[in-house]
Image (cartoon, rainbow, N blue to C red; front, side, top):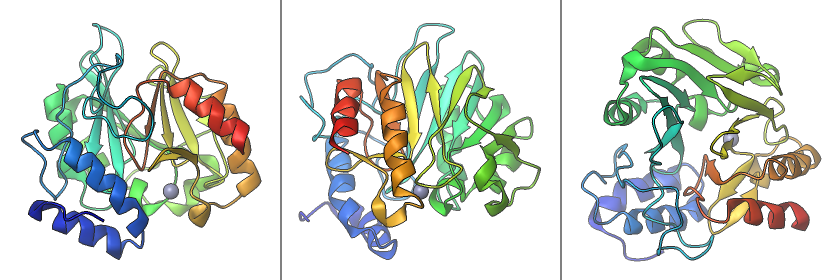
Length: 271
Ligand SMILES: [Zn+2]
């Protein structure tokens, strides 16, 4: 672990408390890459490095987090995404016109950071129509109550097999493989949890993989330490690879916006 900047101390401590010290290296790498940004503080900072999905001169391959991968720019009507950097985990804001979907809600207390990204992206809380949880774990579903309360017009969704594990202020809608939400494809990707759902935008090729994939020190499958069914998790990696995504957004680790399909193919072949 490097010497780090003083402002990273809180984040590093959080990582240790979460028992995921190994992830600290990647998070510090992300923070270092974002060092010139103006909103990068330890508590719930938001991604504000505007960039395009086009290959940039930074980060020639998967290993190095790129500073130009925290938001997409999209033509009118197309889906745009923004990453909500919550430290060791991320949530995502997807925007189409004046409407938004939130994918995952971080640990409890993440609602303000999500709200900031929603404001910056345009629609704000009032524009949120959908809140999709990729799975039941507390670092993804932790702020579902606060998020649904802040977004009164939004429906919440969670995979059928994970549904009973999460409490929400209003009934969550069960989703399964092949469903569609906000024009996005729900892709059953069990293994990490049995009800794990990825989200895929066929138009832009953006894949929100939740924890079916990780990107700490390179693209990987579900972290074995937190995987309910290893065989299913491997099969899900192969299934996601068949989507040939252009961009992969994961729960833990930086986005992959260049060579995503090839990296995922290599991973699927290696499992
Ligand atoms: Zn998880």
